[in-house]
Image 1 (cartoon, rainbow, N blue to C red):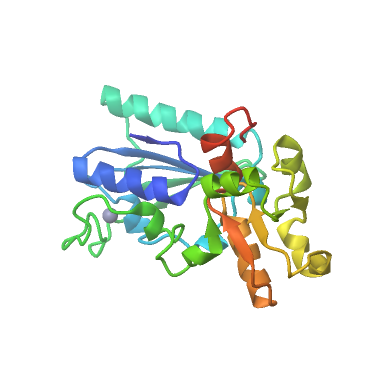
Image 2: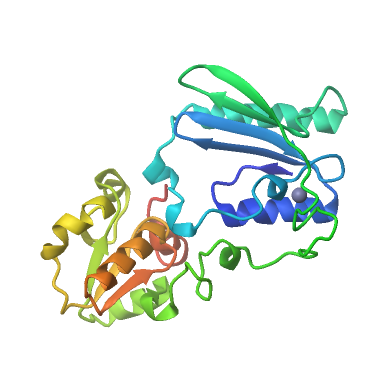
Length: 256
Ligand SMILES: [Zn+2]
């Protein structure tokens, strides 16, 4: 399998599925000016979980929109993954099994780290605790019921929001993305980027019912936490954000 994902739930899902099916997992990831690639193949070396047994807390993971990615990087790392895939299919060369290739685009430098199988790995270790696929969104703290996922009372789904907007309920929509994202697609909400929220919070009226959204629901969850902390009682996070809206409500909306 080739891991072309940009989110942790899918990344762990792909890894665990590969381990359980005894398939190699051609991994690549990018952040800002840096890329990584490896081949995780539990039958012959470490898997992704040997390296990262658990995802970082949901609130700390910057999305591509927040963290930013140099546009050519996906091309460079993706091509390396394609090369590794072809080598595996053809059975030639030395695949990146047990090696993490690090690419620094600013220095134009490649480095390599040796990776070892972790005997305590929860999926490919000696006594694995994961023997079948699990709920990866909950595992990564992105859904209700998990410690960092927030409670359901603080969430609203896109279908509920659509119904409430159609009913013309009194709602204030708050968009906490960046202005360039707002230009691509928006729900007509008031725009206050997450980073400005603390200093612009006076622009909001806490007596209003406020639905906060961002691209995927992660930044808006942080905004909801912040607003609740400063005393807002009627704030809700739009689960799945603009992406869920574009998928389930308005397919004509530009997704990014
Ligand atoms: Zn492992």
